[in-house]
Length: 173
Image (tube, rainbow, N blue to C red; front, side, top):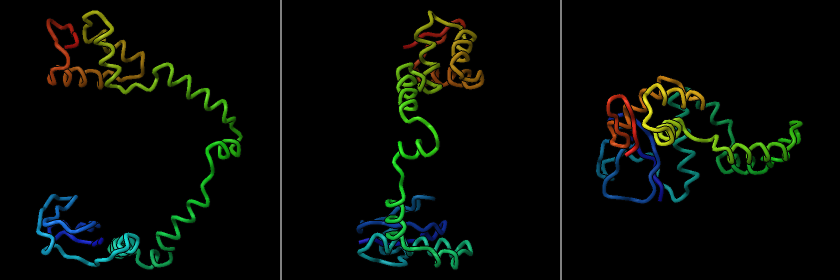
């Protein structure tokens, strides 16, 4: 069973599945017994519950008429499934060689170019021999990481116990 419920504290609307003893609002966190939550609709059909919630949200924003003109969720989902282009067909229609795209992706993955900024800072501390903050900043800068981020990341890594700092030099723990 699905129910569209509302929060008396923040007026948030959401859908719950099943029936638990208490229900917590995902927006404000208020917890109430299931019986005390206002239920706008209870149904066995998930699509129907989604339709009701979407309609209520549209009406709140003054877009009820525009929402009424839309197809149902099931019809929209079916239309999307029918209208989806495969990646290669999309690339070819755009005049892009799909094989070249695949090769470029493989090169990027192989070069380790997808490391996060934090990973770049951690790698600098571990690969460089007891680097100073400036050396870490320089290393990370070569990999596109801004100075401000490196400074904050080093502070967080030290506070988190992942990196040690002594006399201006860093080392991984």
